[in-house]
Length: 117
Image 1 (tube, one colour):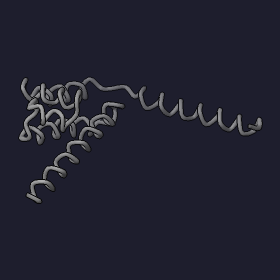
Image 2 (image 1 turned 45 degrees about the vertical axis):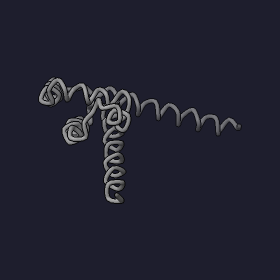
Image 3 (image 1 turned 60 degrees about the horizontal axis):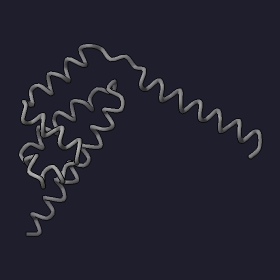
């Protein structure tokens, strides 16, 4: 590797690190925290446990094990969508988006299987 290539690589890494640092250094407003706490509280204790179970073991496994009911998925999706609406939640937004995608894939798969039967 030439000196010029090494310098370009180092500058690129520094830029990436700075962008990541900026993303996570955005200050949260207390109203954002209160808002998401209210959304979580609206779910109720049983629904909160289902959200936690989905995040820990995944959608399909949670439903197969009986820890999550299919009827709960719209409420879980609503809560995760509330997280996604606030970009200041940083990595939690990408985690919520990933979880929403898994729920949508599960629902699609179940609809497809149901349609075939």
